[in-house]
Amino acid sequence: MPPFGLQRTELRVVQRINSLCQISKALGAKNVPVNLFITSNIALLTAWFAFIGASVDWQLIVQIFVFAFLWLVDHRLWRADVISTQYFKLHTTATLIVGTSLLITIVVS
Image 1 (cartoon, helix red, strand yellow):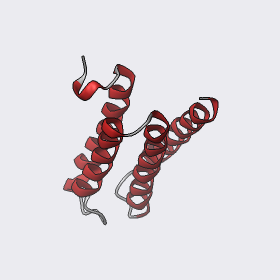
Image 2: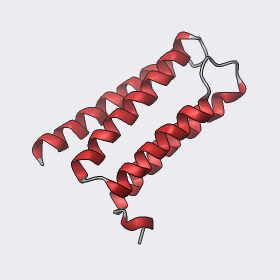
Image 3: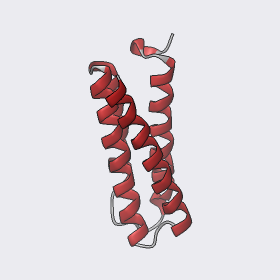
Image 4: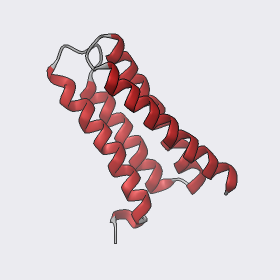
């Protein structure tokens, strides 16, 4: 059983957020305008604590905000020419798909 009673699907979402955060940390070697170590850990811990203590609807809402926050971080990195346009477009598309899916899940449930 996953830790803290998390369901497998919920744990996978936290793992995906963690993956995005790790990508942001990997960029930390370059001259970046934000502290990626702090911002990625804030995003990950926010998602993790939402899964531990919030209702399902709040978990989904927090996920939307975390993905939006990570997109804003990437937008800032893109504007500073730290990440490529191709990566930024890919992350934008993924964020829109995930955000829309989560929003539909909230509305339907």
